[in-house]
Length: 307
Image (tube, rainbow, N blue to C red; front, side, top):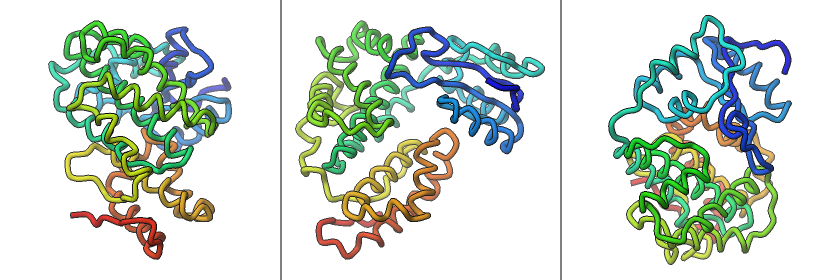
């Protein structure tokens, strides 16, 4: 990497742990007070194949003060490349997890239930696998943290869920299979869609029913016909994934929409959730209203208005 443009940088995830494989992202954290410096550095690192997590020091400090487990992840598993005035090191050294993540675990339920209704297309099914993977990982990390056990490798998270009986016996193989299809979705590799569909329904057999949909409820509408903003209480990331699902519905019917400036903006939000999730959540109603307008003449969709 070239001469740094930001105050602090650190590898994290599999790149720092040393268990990187073909399905892994090359995760790197960049931190600075300047959003323009972060944007420039992110562009440079993305071109080199990194998955970049850009944060201002103010935002990272905010997360730390609220006990975000992402900061615990950085504290336990990151490898700092450089750190001007030790600002990142100080935030990590002072971080302490909260006593309970019960509220966050319940909030994660909204994310997992997004997959009850998804486009019946190769991309839509892979999207569902991606969302289920993320919600399983979130549920596992937070549930294990409540027991004082902090792990962030997906395989170790699943092992921990099995050890503490958070999943039904025999579910490990099914849950691990989701990681492959998550990777396929993010790389837009539209292969083995039957396998992805089977992986989703199989994984749901082993997950706790309150926090995840039952397998008989997934794909029950043969891809679904519903586009609607989420109810109050859903977090910003969940709202972003709902916009993404709505967009996939629209592109299924009108693929030419992909060339519009409106869709380009939505794709920027979707590809950069750490940067845009909060903005997207505030504009969820507006974004979905535009998608509704684009599809209003189609008899193949039932549009549910926000209550």
